[in-house]
Image (tube, rainbow over all chains, first blue to last red; front, side, top):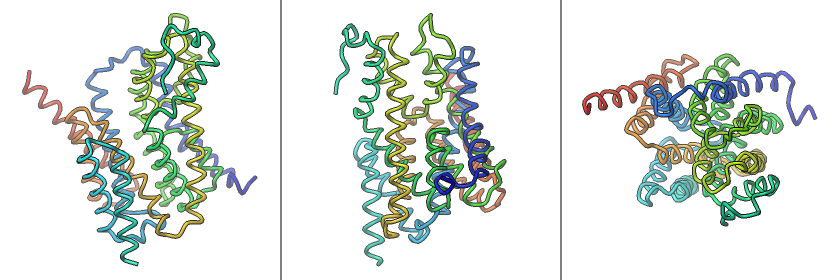
Length: 114
Length: 247
């Protein structure tokens, strides 16, 4: 069991650094949400910051790739994502087509490089 | 798959409504995107040295793809728990407006706050989008049961994907392991781009992507926060300025 869950310390960090800081915003919405106007300017700013943070996470995985993704050359990682995005735009925003195309470019490119 | 009409007797039973919620998981392409994302999260957790039970626990407890990726990648790259918690909580602020906007769809005059706790936990971008699409087709008094079903269905799919991604990362040759790790940024980039409604959303996405590589050279430990708040605030500023010009 300890191998499945890892150390109790790791689980404590999951709760303190992952669960609580995330869940607090959901529960805040449940408790205080009735008073906030859906279209208010604060929420426009919150959404913009949340989007930009997510964009930063995407960039982090591409620029400082984890694990075996680091074995793929920079230009191929960026190229695969650019190709996926181009197909997404060309297919009237099909996420599925974009993801599949990006993956094909990555796998084909890596295979071709050997 | 179509839901029964609003006046159908099938909606009489809350258990049936729950089951309709579970089976609605199969009716959206977003489930596939979520599956791909959690394959990636499982693989990322494996390559960052976390246990399978830990990452499954994060899927149940955190239940927000971006927060899980931030948690795994910050802790995995040696950040402290406090730095990780700050990055997670800032990324989670966006859940607040989602909860605020979606709960009124489910409330009846009899609804108590405690009836909404589990529904609130399930709210993340996919459930939020699907509630807007599906709940108008569900009688109001069955919407909580239906959403519980939808949430449980989505969590189950993601648990399977997390386990599969974790196992695949351990066994696959590096070529396919890299492909699974690329799923996360691809799926997030495209689903975020699809959700952009206003100029501020588009600018936040583009500036956020562009600023991170610059800010990361500072090695502050909270690079994501700095680039995110800066890019988001600039994007909001442009929105504000355009609104003022128009007025």
